[in-house]
Length: 127
View (cartoon, rainbow, N blue to C red):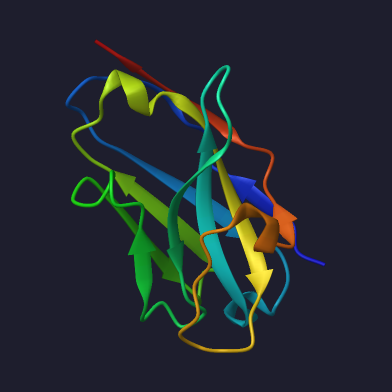
């Protein structure tokens, strides 16, 4: 069982940056591949970024590549999402998710593949 708690999001101006963090409970964080997803009002949940158990492999949604970066610190049981050059269309509730993974380098972009989810944190980007 893993509990995920995202950091507080908040309000940021367009062009600004924000780093979200997601802290995981338990002592087996390194057994989980992690991902970030988001859901804007009235829209379906979409994949943002994923990272392997080891942190050696990352994958970002093509539309966000270059602005968003995922990373993790297994010693701190935490995964991060660095968001730069934010746009109003990035406004959404952001969720982190964890998947028990067999392979060190595996990453997952499908929401249905994840076992555990955080409660979500809202991010609003003002124009």
